[in-house]
Image (cartoon, rainbow, N blue to C red; front, side, top):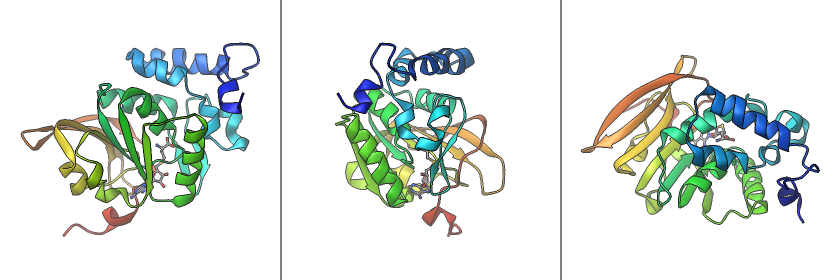
Length: 228
Ligand code: SAH
């Protein structure tokens, strides 16, 4: 049996079983996450395999952790909240910008039919790929590139999640969102307060909900150039 599977065995040999339970009950349920599909997806995922060895002991605490290259894995509550906001149905096709550790990607893959995820830093994408392969995910496709442009050939998408902050919704992403689709992202220029928003496409137009204050790493690449 490999490490990934052993890590989720329902017996006393899994040292992460108790902390994972606490994460689900106190940090997610206790803070208002009610969607059972999300709670069970996260209860069944070994988050400790997505973080570097030196921070593994903190894998189930409700805080972001460094994953290398100056990037972070989002805290479990934010992962659950963003997943909930996407209102995923089992047949949905999802685009994620900012693969990072691949943890959020894995949660989405348990909730939807197919997940496409783009990461700008190749080493992070490669590490995420090996973790996700180890866990036997078959409905995830990863690519390295600037997520600003989305993934035209795989669209349109029922839901789009951007896990890095930008001053505005990248236009190509908006185009690749299906009518009725949901886009969730942290909005805010660098150095300013960020707001987590959900934009729903209704008759081609964004209906925007402003949800809460958040703190994400900035989206790099084309979005940093001034708007035309
Ligand atoms: N969902 C990830 C969060 C990673 S942090 C996780 O839970 O682990 C945001 C990620 O977005 C970083 O890995 C960063 O490298 C990546 N990123 C930043 N700008 C990007 C861009 N333009 N396109 C794709 N990924 C980008």
